[in-house]
Image 1 (tube, each protein chain N blue to C red):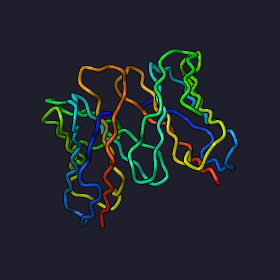
Image 2: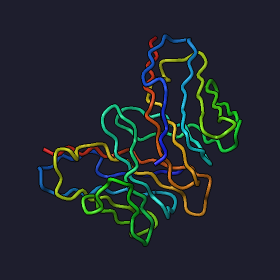
Image 3: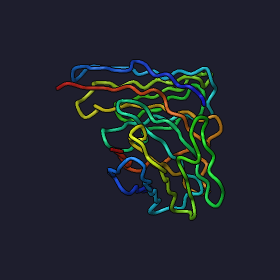
Length: 110
Length: 117
């Protein structure tokens, strides 16, 4: 099992603010994914990063994979209430099994 | 996009009974499916890897006789919780990988909430 620690665990912000969520591990990953999950539903894939130092953007979301492929960050610009949810990172050492991080629960208040 | 469906979405059973949860890939073939469980306000914990036509691989600490997994076809994997007890109550989620594609992308089902009385 490859442990992934996410921080912060909880984040409550006002609409329009920026935020960053971190995903850290002592393991090297061949692939790292970010998901968003709503209560009572399965996770939905946001992005997959595979190259160290890679940066991907998805509208107001910016994802970065660390140079050493041990960590990643998710930055949200001008957060909106629709961004509320549980954000999960998941890493794989061999493109096969993915292990999930501890999760970050985001609440964006209007 | 690829669709994965789980059934039932919710199930309530008495302690000691067995419950089967199905995971189907509706529009693609999946040689590999994964089963996770999620406790309230927590992340997903990988339970086992289900491979079509072969035995499932269980993660450390997961009882294979307690959580029976069958992956008899390229579109269906089942998880049976045997002799369920209240501590087995959880949200069980499956995911599937499209056969022949190695991007690592997983497609998740909607989840099945099990409550054991």
